[in-house]
Image 1 (spheres, rainbow, N blue to C red):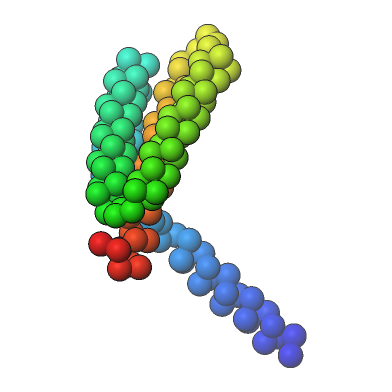
Image 2: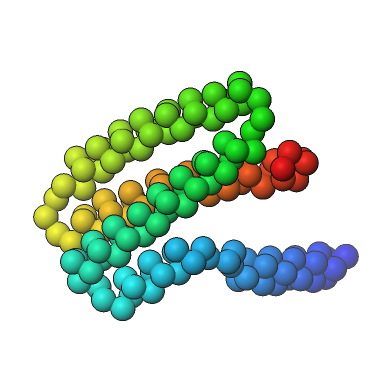
Length: 142
């Protein structure tokens, strides 16, 4: 019986590690961003790459917001989305201010932390809005 338990644990470990190894497909914006950073690791290049990624994620977020807004038919749903986006923008601004204070230190790693953090915040919102769109599609509210 003990041997079966060991075999079961071994099989589960292998399956889980293989499943974990098959990473989630990375968004093309991120693929381009990380490839560019790996190509040139200078502070100026990382800054430019971060700015480009931020702008692309911001555009993606705005596109997703517009699409989601068009999908919503009830005024109260649209109003809730607008309120959510307004609250998110306040969060974004406060988060960026905190990055400016926390990471305003000498050294390029701090510059990258601040810039990459900004990309992360906007990326997260874009992906969140995308997930809302997919949820509505699955529930037949195309």
